[in-house]
Length: 133
Image (cartoon, rainbow, N blue to C red; front, side, top):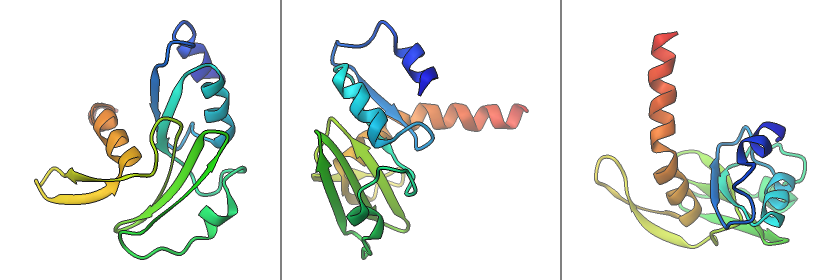
């Protein structure tokens, strides 16, 4: 949290959106950033301390989603091949049509579509750096 806050210094209170993976995201951190008018979207670890119990315990079938809203923070869970837990202070849990790399259409939660669109380059950079080590 401290590192992200230092990196974001100078960008707060301007309405920017921050896309983060599950290493940094949490309900409390997203709430803190929202108070500084900084929106967050990303994946979330299932075992985070303040995740809503109905989300953690939800048993979903493929294509199903469930969401919980508190203090303008949305935490959702969606099942595709695997279950994905996600968080957003910018997007609702609206389902949207998404075209994957193989040009196949899927219906997924909007926060995940936005997260995938904004994190593509980061994932590629991580992949390239792992080959160089």
